[in-house]
Image (cartoon, rainbow, N blue to C red; front, top):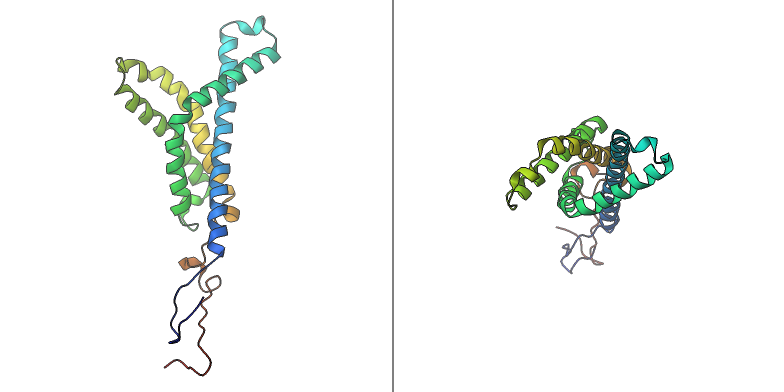
Length: 198
């Protein structure tokens, strides 16, 4: 920090805040990717169950069924990605703005909240899409939405669980946050030679 001839502070910089911001970006991104992985796994398991119910289990080898279900799950994830990204922005805002001391960072609270928000996001997206389609009943297919709520809750719950479990590493306190004082916020005053503060 620099000072003018009058001994006043011109600016106050905390270079560590840049690294803190980068760590939070990494933490939010890793949590989101973990949620996407959970979504893919859940869709793959659902695909295998549907294949068995359709009678393919007695004809198609297990390896082929797993491969087909996994590929189909990837396609569904790619198709759903434009609908998921806005909710990632909301998740990132929560990740950055929620103080680390908040009860929302308790792993069980955060996981349950994530599962609820995952299902809520799915139903809100379906409702919005129904407003722009010629046949809203196709977008608001209740049996399909109930089935899709399982992977949606898995994605939201996993993302929040990973975020809560890694919050101590990626969500470190900023240099001038109230919880960081006085240990991490260092205030230095420099006065020119021969000048003393009044």
